[in-house]
Structures are given as structure tokens and as C-alpha cells.
Length: 455
Image 1 (cartoon, rainbow, N blue to C red):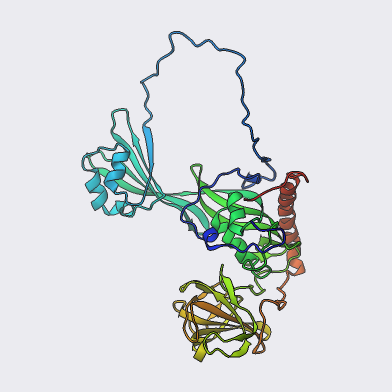
Image 2 (cartoon, one colour):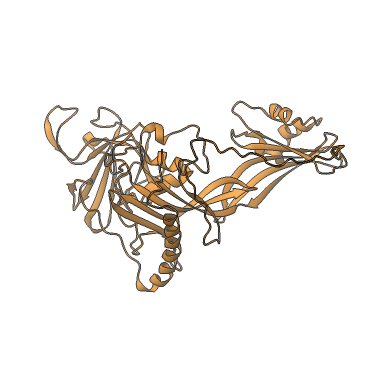
């Protein structure tokens, strides 16, 4: 457990998980699900009592005698569903669903229109509808719960139905996914992922948080116990089930008693990006780190060289990470150099605006297709961590340069981002007002004596 004011560095176990169980209400956190066009709706969540509440019936009811029997003149089919598990075969799944249709299994294996059922993804589901005689009405495989088509979220599934000639038909279906807006609040106790897990926030949204505020907060070094965040984000669902995450719409993150804000805004005729609440673009600034999550193994300044054993100046910061960890550009720029540089091994140098440049060394390999002269955007994949050159183990050597002079990237004030012009401010202010209402509403749900805790 971290003490107040101590770093809350995310552990590898907190970051990479093979299985998680989410609960919508947990650990006293407030999570509010809003409709896409809803402006205010809330559920206040408090800690459950230590002693269960027992309700005693004080009135008896007389049941009818004889008790009415169930009617058997129904026409709706029985619908069964099974979750695909690792190692499952199509035959096993049909058996679990009590589907016993002669010729169905060969049809599914051989028919080209049913090819999406060839790949069974663990965690996704197969549904079957049977009539009262046990005959198949339809079989559905939800192989792609979430996808984006023409900028809109959709869900895709394969449907198998009996044909008039005694065979089967296979048809692919696509349906628009529903969009919801959710709000959540959390407090850092042990790690960022621990707090977002407790708030039932998807991992994809958590990763967006680190990307959006990466130019303001070093999520490797800067997090402290009791840091707090409030967030408004999109989720997608189909038939009442969550199928994917959209984008963060607004974010308020208090780190070391300083508040950082972000809101998604698309000026008329332009692509959208994130701005702070004062209208300054967050995209124009430099990210603090080129890796998503890692640890610093060597800082800027004098040190004893790990290979040569002599004291010399270290012109960058080393980030220890597993070989193959993705490396991302910390700002928009142009590839000025790509190749080997003596002790740096496989190296990329990006040239940015106003005399800024960044260097990424010891890479195992480069991003596919990247070449000198290419334009890259902030956050774009440029290579992978390795140990080429003078290195005792896999890590990224990162340099931040001003007019070719190396500067400590951990202490320098990063370049200020661009701001919106006056013609865009009116629409931006309306967007800000909407999300500030959401944030204020979320904050008002907690009194001073109701502490939100993330465990």
C-alpha cells in the first residue's frame, strides 16, 4: 500500500492481465451510465453495510389451489447460449446447445458463406434457437461484436437457418451498435489500472488516458497515492451487452495537487483532437515518454558506463523494457535519420518544429515501411525496444534535443501547444460547458465525508 504522497508506479501485474472480473458498482466508486443524448442521470453508490440487511415478511399470501399448470401451447423457440472456451470445437459447442441437426456440421465446415465460423474466438458466444420439438430455428455466431464501418460502430454475426430443401442457409448480418456515454471517478491507491478497474473503466479507455495526458503527466514517475480523476467516455453495446469502447470525451486528472484537463473537440471542417479547457491543443506538445509503461533504468547526466566502466555524461534517459516493446514518436515530426549509429545501434532521429529533435536508440527493429523523410504523428509506432549497440540488456535510450544539444527530457518544460482561434471558441465553449456540467454533477455526488476509494 502506498503512503500519501509516495509514487504509485504501475506494476507489470497491474498492467498485463489475462483475465479480469468487473463489477458495475464496487469499492464505493460512482459510475453513471448516460444515454447518448442524456444530460443528467445518476446513481449514488455507497459502501454496503457490514451486517447484511434482513427483511422479514409480515404478511402471508394464500396461493391458489389447485396451482395453475404451465401452458404448453407456446410458439416461441427456446434460445440457448454458450460461451466459447479455449479448446472448444464446433461439434462440442453444438452438443452443449443440444443441436442435433443431421448434416449441419458438414455444412458449417464446407460452405464458404459460413467461413466466419471456422475461427472460434474464446470469450465470444454461440446461440441456438430450438422449437418445442427440438428442431433448429436458427444458429448465430457473434464473431465480431464490435467493429467500425464508415466511422460508425457496428456488430457482425453469422446466422444459419434451415432451408426449404432440407439443407441450410448461411447469412452474414451487420447491425449498428448502440452508443452510451458513461462517467466515472476514481482515486489512485496502488496503480492507475487498479483505480480504473475499481471504477469499471475498460483498459482501452485507461490507455487513452495515458496517451491524452502523456505530454502533461509522466505516468511512470509522477503518479501519487490520492491522485484523483473524473472521466466522461463512450461505450458501445449490442443487445444489451457491452461490445467495445469508444473515445474519451472529457477528462479531469488531479496529479500532485495540480489539475490537468482534456476534452475532445472537432473544429468545423477539421479532424478532432484533444484540448485543455482553455483551448490549448494537447497534440502539439511532446509526450513525456516514448513507451506506454516501463521504468527508468538510467537518468540524464554523469554515470558510470555499464559497458566501458568509465564515468561519462549520459545524454538521454534509459527506459528498461522487454525486447519488442513498441516505441512511439513523442511528437509530430519527420524521420531525419534511420540506421545504425555506433554505440546507439539501430537508431531513429525525428526532426520536429522550432529546432527540436528526438533520438530513439538500441532498437531491435523498426516499424514496417518507415523510411527517411517520412512524416510521423505523435504516438505513431516507429520501432521496438532491443539491445543493439552498446547495451547490457533490452532498453530504449531516448534523447530530447534543442538545436542538436541534448536536454534532460524529465526536467525540461516541454513546448507549449497551439491554441484555438477566436472563430472556433464559441463552439468550443459550448462543448466545454456540456462536459463541465457532467464533471460537476459527478463531483456533487460525493460529500466531504463520503470518500471514494479505489482498492
